[in-house]
Image (cartoon, rainbow, N blue to C red; front, side, top):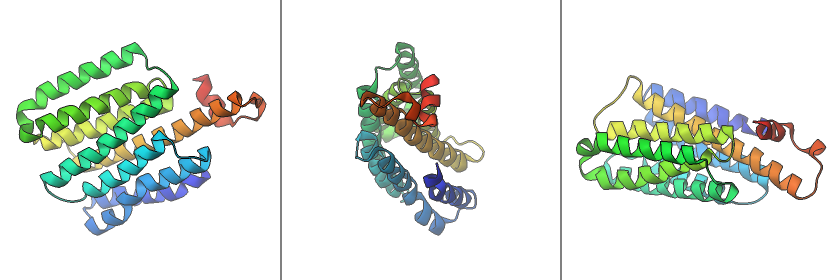
Length: 222
C-alpha cells in the first residue's frame, strides 16, 4: 500500500479543487488519478490486463469531462463505456457473478432510466446504453471480492449522480459527492483486483499459502 501515497495526495488535492472550484488545479490532478492506480496495478501484476486497459479509458474520460458542453460529455461517456466493458470482461473471466446481483442491478438500471427518461432529452439513448454496461460491471464486480463489489457499487453511485445532474437535479455538494465516490470506486476496484488475482495466480502456480500476501488471504476469507 505504500506505493499508493502519491494517489492519496493527488486525490486529496482533487477534492480540494472540486470543493473550491479551482479549475487549474483540477486540470493538474484529475488526469493523474487513474494513471497512478494503473502504475500500482502493473507493479503488482507485472502485466497489462483488462482492468489496466479500463484505467487507460478512465484517464481519457476524465480529461474529456473536464471540458464543457454536451459533445465533451458524450466523448467522456464513450471513454468510460470502454472502462466499463474492460472491467466487465476482466470480472467475468474471473468468476460468474451472483444471480441476485445481476437481477438487482438490472432492476435498478431499468428504474433509474424510467425515472430520468423524460428529463435526459437527447442524452436518453447514450445514457441508456452506458448505464447498462455500468450496471453489468457492478453486478460482475460482486463475483470478484467484497472490496471490488463495493468499488463497483460506488462507481455506479457516482455515475448515477452525474446522470441526475444531466437531468437537471443536483444534491448539496454534488460535485464533491461525485468525485469522492468515483475516487473511492477506482481505488477499491484496483486494489481489490490486484489482491484477488495476485493471490489466485500464486496459489495456482503451486506456491504454498504460507507465502501469499496477508492482504490476499484476508480478501479470500471474505
